[in-house]
Image (cartoon, rainbow, N blue to C red; front, side, top):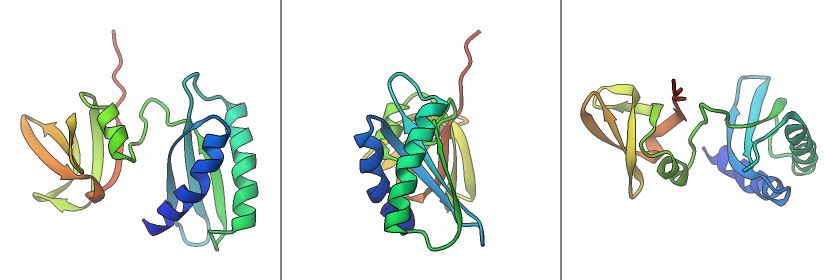
Length: 152
């Protein structure tokens, strides 16, 4: 978590200076080959050229600052329809949507939840799963994403 905070502090200003929304990052340390995935967004959407431009800028900053000691792959991407959720503001933005999440440790005997995100209370999210309401601390959430809803 400390590494992700360090990388966010380094990369957010670069992304935002280019006119994009810094949505979040995933840093997956996998032995010798790690993955740094940076999610960007924009009101007009994101295309491949946007990702390439941001990738070039981030690569330059990462080469100079060198915050990752092992080999890694940088990937710049749109959050997509099943967008991951990283911040309390993003959870608020997606209130009344169906989300899936995995906790860092079990809560009431389980780590995986899928249900309707009702909203946010301080640093907790309110999630309804099978008519049972859970109050889950955001800091316990390992990974969460919106489940795309398709209209007929």
